Image 1 (spheres, rainbow, N blue to C red):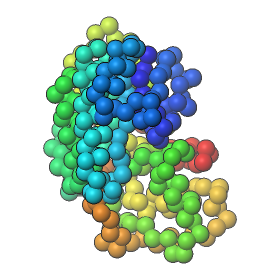
Image 2 (cartoon, rainbow, N blue to C red):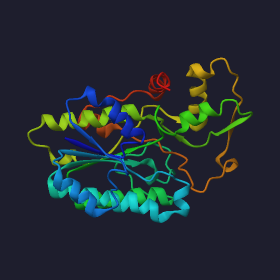
Image 3 (cartoon, one colour):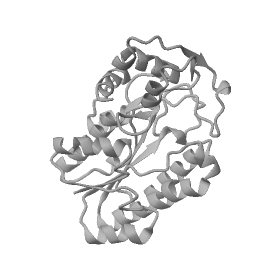
Length: 290
């Protein structure tokens, strides 16, 4: 049985869409069924029901809002995450936790590896980094997956925002923030493939636990990503979208974004034999579902 928290988010809904394709039973919860910030409620669920894995997709992800709502970000990303880590360790449940590129400051110009030291700039990234540290302190049988620029046919995200703004004239998008767009369906598949690989093993070698990076292959700016959305979408093929590249300084936000957040995926490829699609190919598949 796999417990999935944050089931109504992008990743959670993609996991729900994939459940029939994998030989697992799932128990999907969101904050209305399980508030992970309440220790007693988490413990009650784990006492009442047996789980083999927990995929923690629950998170406070409002990056800008977190700058003025630090308490809420820390309650979910630190307290809630720690509650799950402790419950998983107590009950022998393997934890797969989703983290973010925001744990890095974006000052590199080569892809971030798992060995690079995090240095988050804002409240959101700091809360996620603290959550990572707490998890590994309380539960060594954990896989932390850092991802970036997540989008899906579900929920609110950059892809759907761009499509809704196609008629805006001009439509300004920053070109000096670089990363790798990640289709949440591909991330969900990678997680379930990892679980399949772990299930094949009679004994999981200690080196397989720990931190990994996952995003789609390739590199793009937000402007590049927007351009590809309009180029590949049937919704906008007959429109002439007035897309304009701008600097981040021309689009101020409450939270500072990493200017470079490309993640190195070599470790997850080697340890779990994961094949990662290019972001443009992933985008084409997602657009068919929007």
